[in-house]
View (cartoon, rainbow, N blue to C red):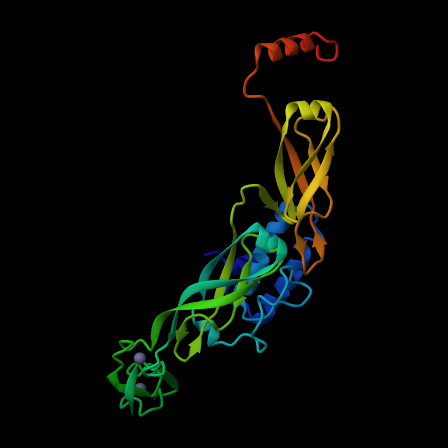
Length: 315
Ligand SMILES: [Zn+2]
Ligand SMILES: [Zn+2]
């Protein structure tokens, strides 16, 4: 577990207000729009966003959320202290480059504790007033007040323990939820869904979905840029040619100029990922991967030997 407070430059006693202030300052400082092409700013920005999402139950301020949609929101009343007491569930959300490119909704399964239907989440039946604290839940001694250790501050204890949940008040169940994957979302992003997590003492916790990007057999994602290699016979690079190939938005044709560098990279503007929130569109980078023949006939070999003696090949 990362130290989310120190990411925001705070100690663990920081108030919601201080967390918000630190987040505003740092997210501005590291925002991708203001730090184009900076890997360290990008990763700091992600850390700061994650720390903010995790330390607060609040929606991220509008226009500062580069991941789009309403993934961190849902709790308009802010940090409910009880909600925050229930440990959040962390769920991996594995997604494909196609889903990130087009934006999508995915059904995700996870396990969470649900309120026991038999005892309504109370863990037992026939509540009786606690005889140690007289139902107050606390005990006064002089000027000090203690939580009653007999009833844990509830003021009552159950005469019979619930058989269905063994007194836990909750039962582990399989759950399903549809998660919106915002366009252009990157690996490591945390999407928070409030109150669909574990049940504990009358309230439900949150679920944090961690975006994981599945490796693709052709493409890779680098920020909002899309990258791929393009296998081209070496003769087509020497003589120049036109090649058609796949992108995530369909087929595209490029012209390889005669005598191009063998490791030349072509940049296709705005063929990368579209970040809905910032409206930034990445580019596509296509790197040549020259293919050498697997074998030569004696005739081919002789031709290459002749070629080698020609002035432009004798370099
Ligand atoms: Zn008591
Ligand atoms: Zn029960």
